[in-house]
Image (tube, rainbow over all chains, first blue to last red; front, side):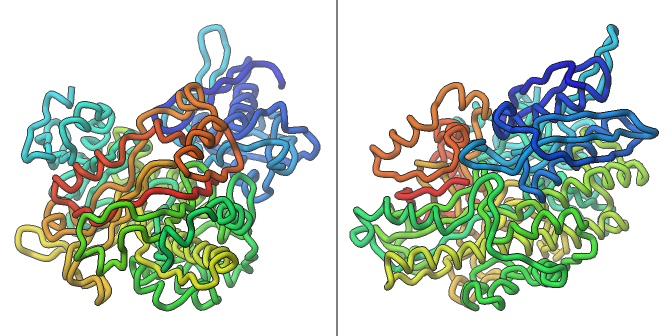
Length: 140
Length: 476
């Protein structure tokens, strides 16, 4: 699940997040690390506690929105940051486990809250070599 | 492609005549300099809005317009429910009712000079700000619904402020039409610990000094004079508002499809006003507005407590509170007849002119105070709504400077520490929890607020009253 990589891409007002990996789930997991990178250096977030998330949607892009939206809601209500993700495909969606720890301003020096994942720049696709990409712009 | 179609109508007003699916023109308020620098995407997005059903008169872009989600930031559009008009979550934005309030303090610069650092410390301790911060209030589910229905009125009844504050808040501090039952449990959970928190990003609390008075008569009515100390608070509906937008976007995308609306962009997510999803969103969004009004009211109370520690004689009174990201039902005259329209303002300020029935008695003669926040380290402005503006853009104007550069470009160009030092040399104390956050909000990453305000005045949308410059800025 840790395979693949993530990146941030520039946008006039906000920031784009992108996950790449050999499976749709790996790309989703990498995109989630990118989401954390908008807020802080993911390396600073220790995987001390885990939560489980299940999302379902028949459409890959809407599933990705649901995944990021649920994760943002969990981050906000639990006041936590996450840095490690394991995602498996289930019937009609994904089951994920996210590891992280409570926000510690001294330790994490968080730059900004992410208000929402948006449909702008939204793409979930597989290239001809079979690699997956999942991306969108987030509102900060 | 759009820039070629721009037609100059007045010194600071431009239009693009309808073509393809556009039902009405695009109207842009800007001077030559702002037009030259305007992002082509603004025209594209404003044109997409002009193609939505039931739009009335025009799709407007204000002087600070920049790329937004679906609608441009700085976009204004009104829809007629009787003509198949729509309501759009994308037309309101993610931070529902994000807005600004300005407080007079009764203090003058000579009383505060030399105490800026101390004041910054007290405010930073008192105001919860930044990622992961929590307010002191904890709301039960009954209290949550009361807050979502009552807005700033709820906060005042809970002891956070005065009745006079409400008179100087849009909607008298309470947005009618709120239906908390359409706000999801997730949204309510996100707000449980966030009432009375500032947030992060471009949100701030600033202590300012009046450095110029442009219209002495109106300034007098607003209770402002040269060297007065004021406070400006910029924040919104926090996690609750973001969640309402997140929840309704997919519902509206589906509803649009069901009603045969072809969307040029999924962020234009909308539904007919007279549809279940449309009505539900309106009820939830009004609850979001109340959440923001309550939040700014609680922050006002915390600010008063902080000032009282250092300046026991200070009396903080509310000049006005404006919301930027809203959809409101307003009566406007179209072709000589009054019509009830759903006016979307996204990153735009309501700017009602003199005599408008929604204004309190003391502001009737001069018009609504319009609060234009600058960026950290630059000036802010207070303007007044005009009669002319009511006809030009449904009584609306710009909301701030508007971003000119991406966050990543800003962090490459500036370091947070350098910005804090540079502003300190100019006598401005910055308190922010994150240096990267400060770099992302560097003053240079924004358009020049003075240029935006001057273009707004030239266009006739609002009239300049006073200029304020920061002394202390608490960033989220």
